[in-house]
Every structure is written in structure tokens, then in C-alpha cells.
Amino acid sequence: MSQIFHPSTNTLARLSIFGAVFAAAALAFAAGIFARSSVATGVGVAVRQEVPFSHKHHVEGLGLDCRYCHTGVEESSFAGIPPTATCMNCHSQIWVDSPMLEPVRESFRTGDSLEWVRVHDLADFVYFNHSVHVAKGVGCSTCHGQVDEMPLMWKENSLYMEWCLDCHRQPEKFVRPRDEVFNMDWETPPNQLELGRHLVEQYDIENLLSCSTCHR
Image (cartoon, rainbow, N blue to C red):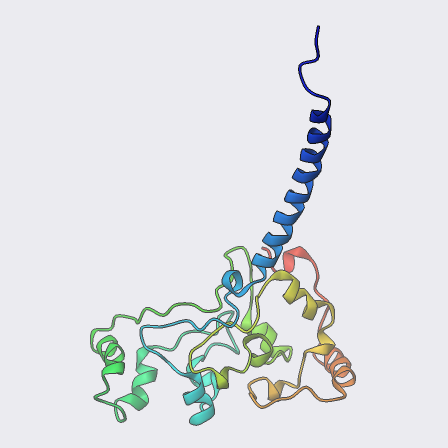
């Protein structure tokens, strides 16, 4: 019986196998790059809202403390979104006819909440408690970046597990005194490791690396 396939097909078969392996590796590499890109993480991408609230104007310009709006951040697992009444404490007296603020006034009149788009939206299977991190000396800017320089809000960090673990493994690199947690002008001092080790002991900070710490 004559040979059906030419001997060269053996070479083609080997090349196709190697090609498939390299193609799979290239796809995996590309997927990894995409997963860390701003398209997937949202890092550095300003999020448009119904009302273009500027943290830069309110924090840097007017000097508002984070806790004026995010009232629950020290006691609750959620930082909290301020009710429209908080906005109207000022805007019932200033910019009262601004078309840009009409949704705020409408919300105040009707009692219907504004529809804000969440910027830092953790997956449902992740547990995070703001009050715990504040009490342990984790500054707002450590996670959220220089909010006082953001005309529109964006994510400064990916919030991926590997990013969280960097701090959980070595908290001494990141913690600061509690009275500096809300200070947007805080700069990491040259003796951060020495200061951090002292604060880790003082605040009884543990290296919590168990899965159940965040996945409950």
C-alpha cells in the first residue's frame, strides 16, 4: 500500500504542535498584560458622574476634611456617600442657580438619591472595612491617591489582591500616625521603616494573610 501522506507532513505536524504551545503562551501573556491595563483596572481613568463633583476644588481649594462628607469612615465598614442635605449645607447659599447643580437641588426637593457611579467597587466576594484600616493608621491617600488633586475621581490603584497583600505582608512600609490618616499633604518620611515598625507594635497590627481575612 502506498504512503498516503508525504514525509514532510511529519515536520508540519511538529511545527503545528510547537506553534500551538507558543500561541497559547502568547495569549496567556497578552491576557496578563490586559488584566493590568487601565482598560481592565480603571486605574487613572476619570469617572464621569451626573454631577461633576471635584475633590480638587472641595478638598484642596476649600479645605474640606474627608470626614465632612464621608462621615462613617472611622466607625463603619463603608466610607459612605453623603446625603444631598450635606451638599445643600453650602449650596443652598452659594451657586444656588447653577445649572450644573440642578440634579442636587432636584434630589433635595424630591428626596430621590442621586445616582453616583462607584469608582472603588470591590467584588462582592471581598470584605473590606474602612474603620479597621483607619484605626490601624492607613491613610486615605495610600489607597485612593492624592484625591485633593483630582478634578474628577479616578482609581489610583488596581485594588487587586496582590496589591492588598503588599501592605498586609509589610504594613510598616505604609502605616502612618492616626492623626495623619486624613492629611492629604502627608509625605513618606525617610525613616518610614523605623516609624512603621513602631506603629505596627503600638497599633497591634498583624500580618493577616489568611484567605478568610478578606474572603468571608
